[in-house]
Length: 188
Image 1 (tube, rainbow, N blue to C red):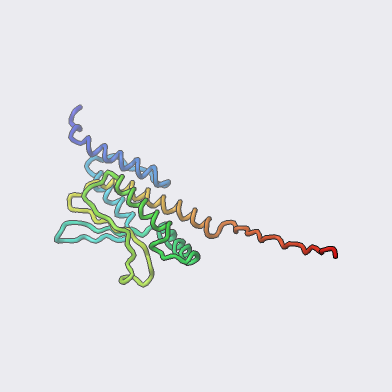
Image 2: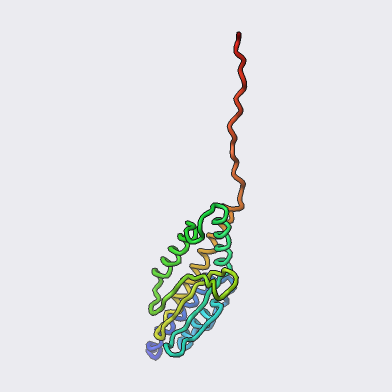
């Protein structure tokens, strides 16, 4: 009966991963709970979300690059908003709010031993493509918490894109012009 007590953490981690994937992925079918492979499944799920993975050999850390389509669409709408209102992109209130919200999502996550940055690689890529970089240290093991945080960030960008799209392209604002005053004749 007590043979599997040593694998209880593996079972709990596998259950947490299944809960996160089931909550955020509508097509997730589920896997057989295997406490020995929970860490591998979580690593693979994070690798599937990232666009590029680079291992830094001499430090043992891994650099993950995330370019969510909703994130790219949101920042394109922010650029349009900045052009229309004649403000700088980095001073756009939507961009500032998004950076603060991403910071809050990452601070609220339970993951440890990583660093992150929202970045626009202007000198590497010709187009302005905003990305989220996450560098996990060699002792990083909180993949389930990080996956949950990444899904929350992705959903936030989707919601904000819809709101900004509605603000930019929604129903046109009606401007009422002052009515012209009628000329009155003075009786002589």
